[in-house]
Length: 322
Image (cartoon, rainbow, N blue to C red; front, side, top):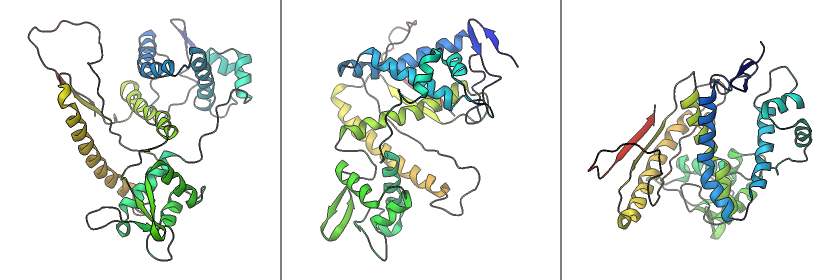
C-alpha cells in the first residue's frame, strides 16, 4: 500500500508494526492527535527543561540528543519486518537529513553505554531477600545473612539468582556505596531498606529519570491512543487546598501507606514470576509492575480558563483509566 497524505503529514500506518499489541491507530491520524502529542511532550519536558537551564545546559545539547533519539527510535522500533532500514527511510520518518542520519547510525553520535549495575538488579535482589522466608523473621523483616554460606541463605545466592553477568561482590560493593545494605562483623550483610532508593550518589538517583517516566508515559499512551487491548491501571487522586503547616504529616502518611501497598503488590507479582514460582503460568516472557509516586506543589498546575461556580472553596478529583 502506498502512503497517504494527511494535512501535510505522511501516514506510514501500512508499513509500521504495532507495539505491544496496540498499534496506536496510525502513526499520524490527523492534526488533532499530532498537536495533542506535541503539547503533551512539551508539558512532560517542562520540569526537565527547568532543571537543565538551572544546571547550565543550553537548548543545543538537548536538541542534539533528541535528534539522535528520533533516529534510534525509527531504526529500532519502526522497522518493517523483513526489510532493511535504510538511511533514506529513516530520514523520511524523522525529518532529519540523510547525511546526519548516516553520521548518527555510524556511531559518531551514539550515547554512552548504560552502567553495568542497574536499579532493576538492585530492586530484584532486595525483593528476593524480602520474599525468602529463610532470610526474614516471622514478621517478614529481613535478617542479616552471611555473604557466602554452604547452607542456608546468603548474599551470594541471592546475587546469582538476579544476574550471572556481574560477580556478587560487585553487587555488594554497589549496594554498600549507595547505602542499601551494611556489612557487619563476620561478613554478615544487613539490609537497611526494603526498597532500593539510593541514599547517596546523585548518578543513581538521576538514573531513575531514564527509567520510571518512560514506563508511566507508555502506560498513558496506551490508554489514550491504544485501539486494542485492556486499558492499564492509571489513577491519581489529589486535593488543591492543603495547608502548608500539615504537609509534612501528609508526606509521612503517604509514604507509609505507599510502601505498605507496594509490599503487598510485590508479594502478588512474585507469585506470577516464573523465577520465583515454577508453577506460574507459561507463555511469552513479559515485564510488568506497578509504581507509586507522590506529588506536591505550591499551587495546582495552571489549566485553560474555564467558568467556575462562585463560592467553591475546595476541589478534589480522582482520575483513572481502568
